[in-house]
Image 1: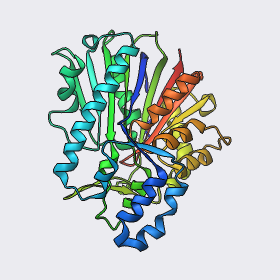
Image 2 (image 1 turned 30 degrees about the vertical axis):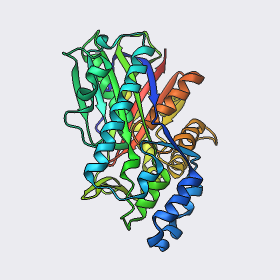
Image 3 (image 1 turned 90 degrees about the vertical axis):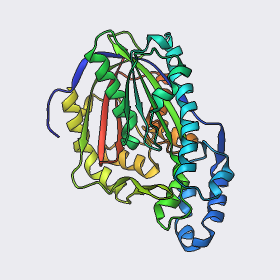
Length: 355
């Protein structure tokens, strides 16, 4: 990682809100449906069925009724579900975050929107502008392709834009509908893993320059690993997006995370020893285990990550903000380093300090 000072001007996190869709499925039900759905690929399901039991997930929120997932859908059907659900999740999360900040929609100067599980042109922020109540001159920055790293990278981008324009107020919204990418036609093991892990949700935060806040955003940095494009991402295929999950993800994290976190810390002006707590994207149980092993954390230090994974599954970008929400409820430690891995393969980091 090229080293330069990544500390920002003082920037504040004013609020954080989360939102989930209305349909809830228990993991036991998902496993039973997966056995039926992959019935024609019995060897594939039998080989991977243990992932439903070992995923550390109890339930998930999804954007369509469970029966929807049991039939085939093409791009048009999937993206139609994405647009309807993502717009509602955007409005819910954005409205809640603005209200929690004690603001009105017309106070928002700019919106950063992160979403990678569907296509929206006009973008989600434009589609939802009137429903939320944004001004007609609100600045819009829609971002696609960040995947699971989008929660950290998106918040970092919003904070950088706020810091660069003192006095401006920025809204960050991330919406992901991972479940609509579940593919019953696939012979890839990742298709079964996706059905065992994916949930849907959204999160939003309001940031501004200055010191008054829930927390201070002190800096951010990112590590992009070379020759890792096939570790994580989407393949764009005729029936829809097909998830790319390489089995190498947990061992890769275990091997590289310590030096990566050290480099991120140096970039934001601290040492790893100064971190009071991580706030990590819980992509899966094995990922959490790998983070703990790589950084030699004590058992239970990532308990909130495991709780969020248990209650919501892997929602991609919003998930780390669900962890942060619980951390804020319990009292943010003095220095918290948010981390998330995403397609690229990349590790994003952001330093928060207690207000």
